[in-house]
Every structure is written in structure tokens, then in C-alpha cells.
Image (cartoon, rainbow, N blue to C red; front, side, top):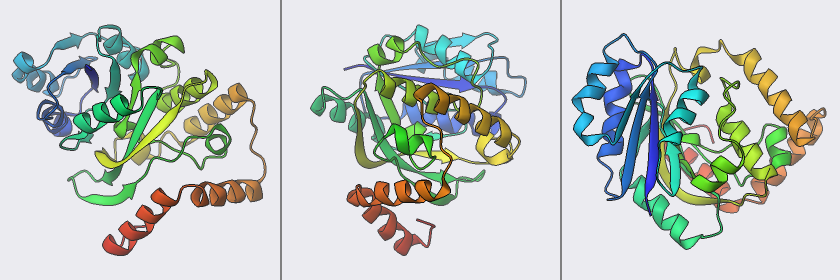
Length: 264
């Protein structure tokens, strides 16, 4: 089973080499690695060139945003399973071999997600993060997320729903999950920590500049799936039910919180 991983790069020279090495140092023998750079001018392309003999495909061309760059990369991919890692994030050791084994055991799963951690600009762990049991109703109410860096999906399902929406520049992964769920895809989880998600001043999540656009895109996706969240009380109920119906993750949250002092 071949696993194709795409990294999109644009002026993240501080973190890029660590991201690339986290893929190249995986123990799984059948990884296809594709790096797409839309025109970095900060030294990122020199780092990519440094690893050219270990990267299967390098695409140096402009794109129309992150989702478009990912689509360009996956158009060149030959794997059975797809995943992507942003240039400021990190795959943990053995992540791909665990994912490949999970897909082998769950032959009907379209998407398999693991857990991870939020790290800061210096790589310090700030909080554990968990993929929920995916549910469109809970997703619409904002109480269901998948850790993107720790989520992998089948090639056929990705192309069947038309890939990432290139016009969504802030939550293209969430829209892909919704599209896949609407198409009947089956979601599964691997209760293992697979990746670190870096939040810093220039990231979409960390900068705060994109809050209004994130809300706008979420509202549009809710319209697509036909659920229009209005009640804060209902949101709290769905949140509670989501936690109660997922005892493994809820217990992990609690134990990690007690052990590390993180917010669960």
C-alpha cells in the first residue's frame, strides 16, 4: 500500500526543514513524497533542493492558494492513501506505518484520523488535540474536528468529491471532510498520536486575521450540508453527547490533562 504525502510550502523557511525531515525519516518503506512551492523567496527553495534526491516530486509553480497547491500535488500522486503536511507542521515517528496498518485492517474506511499536539513556534507542546468521531451535525455546530496533520484518506474518495475547494483558503480540510461525509464516506480513528500542529503568529489559526473568513466559510459549508446552527443550548447538548459517546477519547483528554496540566 503506497502512501502519498504532499507538503505545500510558501515562505516558511524557519520550519520547513523539520517538516520535510519528519516525512523522510518515517519507517514506512512505501511513501511517495511530493513538495509544492508556490514561489518562496526566503530560502525555502534552497532547503527543498537540498533534499531533492529524497523527494519523489518537486513542483515549483505559482498557485491560487493552499488548496489549489495541494490539488496540484495530488494530481501527480500515485499512492492508494493520501495525506498532507503543511510546511510548519511535523509528522511523529512511525505515524505512516501506523496509518497504513489501520487502513489495511479497515478496508472500508475512507478517512482515518489520529490525534496530535499543538506546538508553538519553538516546538514546545502547548496542548494535546484529539480527532473526534466525525458527525456532520456536530461538525456544523463546531464541536467536531479532525486533526488534519494526523488524517489520511483514500485516493479514490478524494477525487470522487472533486478534491479540495480551491476557493476555500482557510478551512479546505473541513470542507473536504464534509464533502466526503455527504458522499457516504466512512470515517474511522486511530487512537494514537501521529502529528504536531504548529500554531504561531503567521499561521492561519494563530494570527487571528482570518477569523471572519473562517466563520464565513463555515456558514457556507453548513448551507451545503443543510444544517443551520442557531441554538447555543443545542450546541452544548451536542458537545456533551459527543463526549459521552466517545469514552476512549474523553478518557485520554482527562488523563492527559491531569498528567500535563493541559486544558482537556
